[in-house]
Length: 99
Length: 485
Image (cartoon, rainbow over all chains, first blue to last red):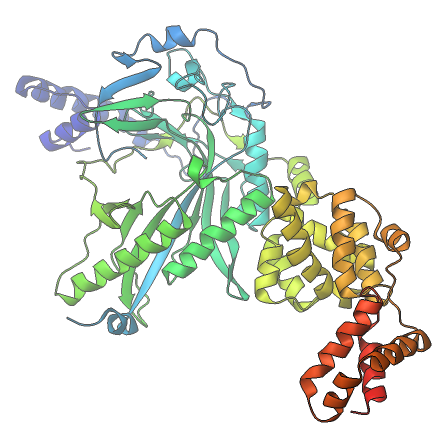
């Protein structure tokens, strides 16, 4: 398994919206590389004929009935927003993103 | 510069649509917060919607049932086991920084939508229909944005068509057909003004005869039937001009500005397309069992495209009338119920005329929908029969209709009470004709002298004397005989 390149570390940092300094980038390159290397040992195990598994416990998705429950602590939940205007949360404009 | 029409002879537009449809549930996809349009901002939230630590999503059974209805109605392959995935992006419309969606194992694949184009039905392949949650709504105000998370977590299906549409008209008809279908199946209100049905389009052009697809652009924010058509037309023209000028289409996302009537590239966000999908560890595999599928299959009504064809082929309605009749499921069902109560297939067109002109007109005037019609199908069928068997004339029929509509009375009873039965007895009518001719010596002489236009005068006189009850066919016959021309 090739070690992580500096460029890959920078890309991952960007995706995670982390601003890393030069020394941090260097440290991450080594540390993330070591983690990846550790996990690469899994690749040595033969998985032929084994279906991919995404959950450790084989359970089905539980379903809930379509009933409304009003949360009484909404105000408390929204209190964590850095800035508000009336009922609305206010954030710096980021045009052109989202779905 | 080459004319656009000339370029279109060489180049073929290829369009694929991605349509988001909100599912009409009472509560959200993964938590019991309510779904209400127009509620006070941020009132429909809970720990799951806000992505607070410790909250866990539990999927809404009703959302699954609605999505399955659409899957079945589009002939899709439905996965017995599908999977939820996290789609990661950072944007304030989704506080947990990912959207729960489906990725490599969607609920439905390889279906089709029957799109009504003109008088025909064109079957467009649907690549997939997957479940996901809606994001919150951002309103940009200067340098700041206002966030309302009421929409966040509302269940959606994303319907993805194959790139098989070849014009903006076809794309708009695809939207109309999908809109009609989801309303028909009561999957969604699909009110576009409320954002309950939203559309993105992938547009490319290729030389006619070429199999490979050209580079596509994605148009976002085309949320009305008209915008779909305008935005796509505009994009096809932009791409053709670009190519004609020696340029190349870049793969990009463009935002449609309906007010300006043009699109502009969205600011490209570096790496923005790396959504790092992975299976959501909070949501185990979604299982659809046999009994659930059986229930949905059994409950499926006759679909609009099938009715559209049946109305044309079996009943002989024009394409326009058939399209109007399937505009709403309740209207189509009213029509079918009236035909059934009447019993004669060949009267379908007559019945359709009564519904489309008299009934819809009266309902419109009264500000009522077809479901609130004070005239039940059986009563309309009875009225149509009274006209067909000659008991009353078509003109009187309209009066009886109005009275039956206003008072909720049986047409037969109205005819009896008002004594407006048509007079078809020849002897009775001959006597009236005799009277009219005797009273109009001048007109008789002129008519017999060649003034054909006077014939209407005689018919009018007979109608006047019989309060409009004279059978017009017999009256015409008798008058012609009596006047000798």
